[in-house]
Structures are given as structure tokens and as C-alpha cells.
Amino acid sequence: MIHGMSTTHRRAPGATQRSAAEVNDEIRALWLRAGGTLSGEQRREYQRLVLEWASAAPRPQAHTDSSQAA
Image: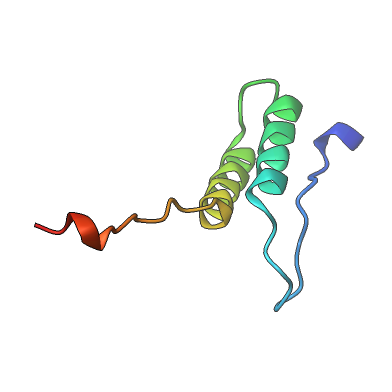
């Protein structure tokens, strides 16, 4: 059953981190395969992917302007 196979990419230890866009694509594919309802295993995969996405997503940089100090 091909549609039930995971597209999760396992990285070797020390491999570079995937981009947030790559992880987001996998999250979208998971939801499409699931038809909008996740099984227990799919839910765990989704949670893992969301954590991976959050660690890969760019962080807004704090803007500090010394000329506006109080």
C-alpha cells in the first residue's frame, strides 16, 4: 500500500538540518495522505514534524537601537 508509506526523511547523525520549508512540505503531505484525520501513529509523526519545523523556522531578531535608550 504505497499511500500508507511514510515520506519521512531520516537523517544520519551529524547531517545538516532540513529547512522549515522542507519540513512544512512533509507536514502538508502527511495531512493529504491522512485525508484530514490522523491516526495515532500519524499524530505522533505530525508532532515530531512540528517540533522539527519549529527548530528550523527563522527567528525574528530582536532590534536594539542604542539611540532610543531611556
